[in-house]
Image 1 (cartoon, rainbow, N blue to C red):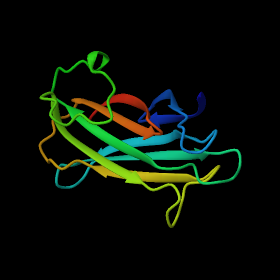
Image 2: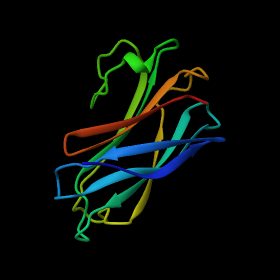
Image 3: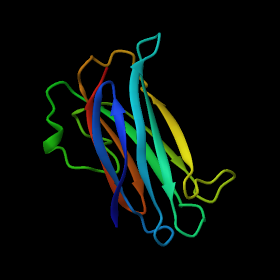
Image 4: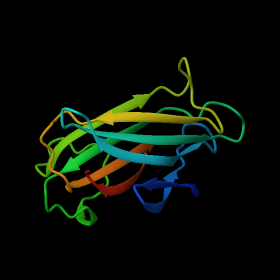
Length: 149
């Protein structure tokens, strides 16, 4: 099930994002809220992405992961298939992944907002390189492509 919900902003641009529903809990899904990227003092790229839980029964939405991947200059992301991992892809400069257990200590429930901060491992990622953020749940991956600040 795919359901558009909240829009997110990056600088002055506004784009719509849809995060596909997963199969973990019947009818559960997560959607992107706000998202922004900036540089840290040491040159790393910091990506803040908000996800919002949706689960009609009030339960936890289930396990999910968020990721940020930076690609080599000139990579046209239109031609890069969405994947749960870009490990071994020679076009990647860096990738960061964070996963959560849906029924853990502080599960994401219907209407909950959670912000994840993913920070690049590298300090030398060039400005303007392709950046893909993703959320993965129940075997379904959705993404948003942008450029690195």
